[in-house]
Length: 183
Image (cartoon, rainbow, N blue to C red; front, side, top):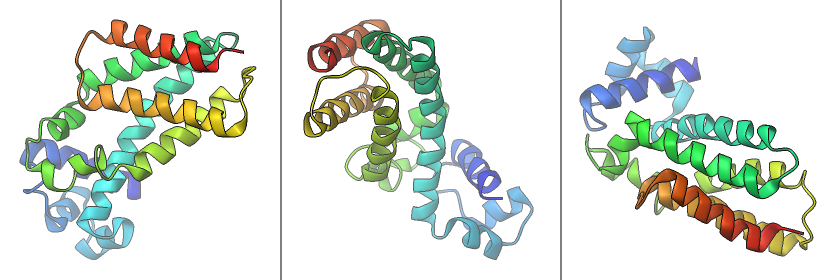
């Protein structure tokens, strides 16, 4: 039920904007009571965080696929993952609506990608760390955590504010990663 509610919220946000999304409209879209929507996702700000984390899951699937494709080359896995994430971001309508601050999204959604992105960064960092530790990396825990945090935040920065070609950006992220993560 939660997944249905979050997916419907994303669709409604694209159609009517975040400001136009009400729990009542969302309940009607899903075909449940408004109380059921509140029971599933809590308040509207909690719904916003659920939407961001649901989108993040799509991006982390791209990351997993890249690491699966390059189980013997960490830097190349990071390059492929970065490129895949940046390309997915370019075509993600909900993300583009949030980042462009359209649809009234700037008040609750945009900060979840920028200034209040703790859950996003934490979730992505855990997922990337799980993948990176399968490779031989000669770093102590503190420096490994710092390197992974750097990669996650750098990719996120380019997702929120792309400044160049996805392939070039992925190459640059891989180069930086290679300088810090190669044994």
